[in-house]
Amino acid sequence: MARVSNPKRRKLADLLLAQIFPLVASMIMTFATAAILGTSGRGVLALVISSAGLVGALGYLSLQVGIVRAFRLGDVSAPKRGFKIAFLIAILVLVLGIVPVMLNPGVRIGLFDGAMIVMVACGGALVIVNLVVLRTYQGLGYSRVFRDAWLIQSVVFPMLGVPVALAFHSPFPVVACWYVALALSTAFALSRRNERREERPGGSHVPRIDILKTSIAAHVGVAGQQLLHSADVVVLGLMVSASAVGVYSIAVPIAGMIWVFSEALSLIAFDSGSRRATAADQRAQRSKLTRLNFIVGVLACVAIGLGSTILIPLLLPKYVAAVPLILILLPGVLIQGYARIGLSSILTSGSKRSLVLIGLTSAALCVLYLPFVGALGATGAAIASSVIYSVQTFVVLVVIRKRMKNLELEEANVAE
Image (cartoon, rainbow, N blue to C red; front, side):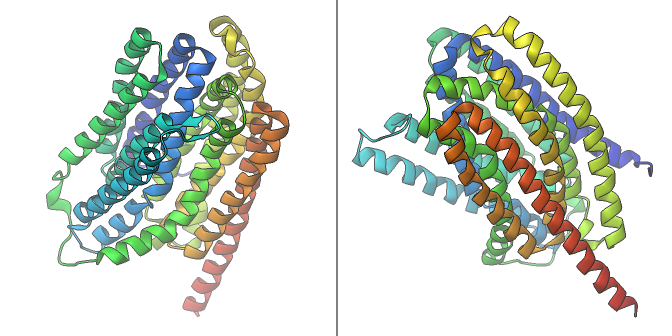
């Protein structure tokens, strides 16, 4: 295996820290709120945050892709203009969430009442701006700004949320603490927008419509991915009790700890500039990242499985039903690490057709949650998740292989 240069090692270390510290804080927050709020309260909290996260993930339009591309073409104003678009989208989400509830205060859909719908809209608006700002900085190579912003968010939430949960024993004030953490994280990143100005290009202007077109084309793939990872909790919120959602909300982040390393590697793949690399270089880079991810992932699966089986009955006996859910989720989570890395490499390639295919397939697969949850509740959601993750990874693998063959043919034609 080729040696990794010191700059790349430092970048991977920064990105890992940006994932590990939030993971630790998330685990503290998860276990603390589970113990304090009980299964029902924990279920409501998880449902609001997961739903708001899904709204934000669907609504931010992957604007960082268009912004970063415009910046690299020499448009130094692209980040500022892109952030303005993000704020406008966030305002639209607020209006769409609040106005219908004002017109029909008694609205209720599953576990979602008017108050929860408004809270989801507020959280979604904050997530949209947060994702665009932080991912833009990461895409531009400012990995330490990205890391520090995530650290702020991950530390502030439990620091405020746990005492508030103890004081009020209600999930809604805890959600407000999440809002504060998101806002502070975004504000910190925005305050660093003038760093490294001397390294920036100049002399070009990319219209907003072009930024949007580039971003939306990429977002089709990303949106399907985000829907795939959040639809389970939302579907549960529509079809089962808050207590069942609470138990499931413990299983998902524990199994998802494997994705910490996968996500850091996928971010490396995103900003590695693979679009200008040859097919052989891209294949070697992806092979190195996926091999590393698999080795770490298998070890993590064993540790998480054993740890959950032993610790959850001791620390959270009310959530012992989460243990089999974790064991069901782990294989799919491990396999899906490849899809994360592969999708990031496709994002940098500019292959719009590949992104659209993956995105539409991922979104379509989410339909499987409905019959599984309807028949088996939370267990069905876990089974469906592992199946969906595996099928989506297979689709990504097929798309990447086809794209590599096409790129090799193009290179052969150029050589001739």
